[in-house]
Length: 362
Image (cartoon, rainbow, N blue to C red; front, side, top):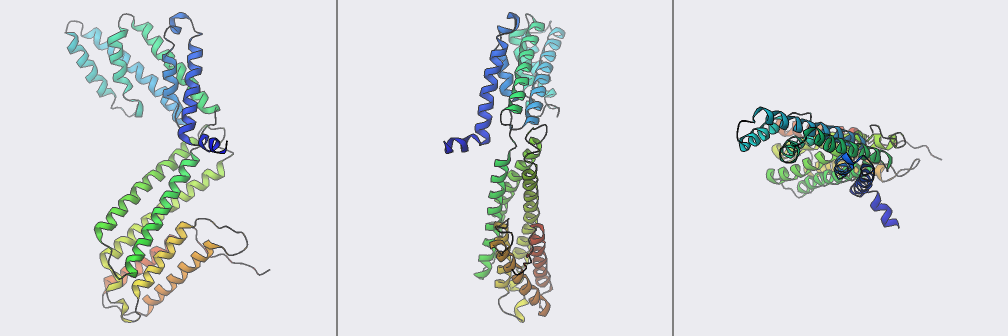
């Protein structure tokens, strides 16, 4: 029973259930209509399936855009057919399809653009005997199904897309932390990160960030006209804040990686005062990775794992800043790059809201 409950909370499963219910209801309603429409009742489930999307706003948008695209395709087909009665049918169809594809380029249609050409060809093949009746049957029943699809999406566990967003944030968090740890490992081993290697890792991180941003945007869309939005307002706000904080840190980490790869500051004269610059730099990056992996405190009044990681990162930053203050580098570029890395790590902590908490003794 527990496994079934978990599956029902998966967006794909929820959408499948909503689509099935909406299609069944649309059919049942359509067969009760007058014979002119009920004989073509199968168009209603089509509209219902078209309208079932992950969010209420997307469902409503898909419903009206699909019907409008269908009407545009029908009008285009009938209009061009009447204007080209004297030309061969092959040329008429070619002109209609060409015009429909051109109309599909309008941004108004979005994902429903292909319905313009589909409806135009459909009208040419089966609807020309009685265009008005065909428009009523096809577009009318599709609209009916779309309305039912939107209503089902609104009533039947309307999704907020929270699960998907949390998964994408967690995946991005892990990848970002692994990226930082990977740089730290190469620095501890005395190696220089290879540009090609880090370029590949950066691309993987970019893809994860795109998926995370898309999931966050889906949550924002899902809140529109959603009766559950008020109940989950705090959780949705937390997801937005986490996503955008990780986005800012990822930009900083990309800059840090470029600085380390390009200028190799741990190998450019800063070690004249204190040995082990690479290790100090690695500790700072590794500490930031630990904070990225621990987004929340587990306690209210006592130090926890997140506090420990914040403290370790700040201690590493203090050593790095101390090294910069006492160094007389032979290479100005390396010195400035190392300073920029220190500033970047500090800004990363700020973006993550990572501050050492103060505790009062009992």
